[in-house]
Length: 96
Image 1 (cartoon, helix red, strand yellow):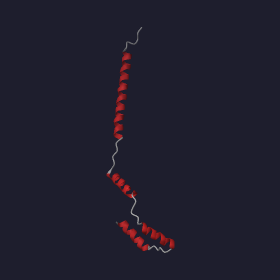
Image 2: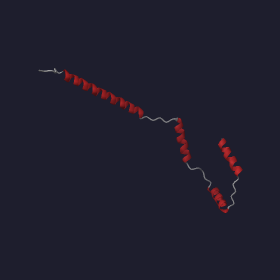
Image 3: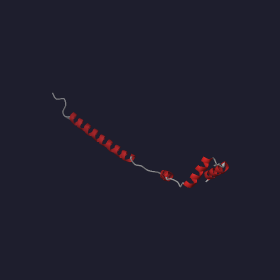
């Protein structure tokens, strides 16, 4: 007595095909999402920040003669800092 007339095999084949198609569609969707997620955009602010960091990393002009004069005056105990002049210069720079 035959209970199965082949329809179960056909249904299993259809089910397997459907599963394979869904898996393939999911893989394609993930690949599309991954491609979109791998892009990089730098804003104008970030570009400006990079330029400022590069400028700041460059050594500034150093007047070595003046530095040596100040070091010698400090070593001799002759250097007197004018706090009014220093604070005025600092406030002027912050207002610019």
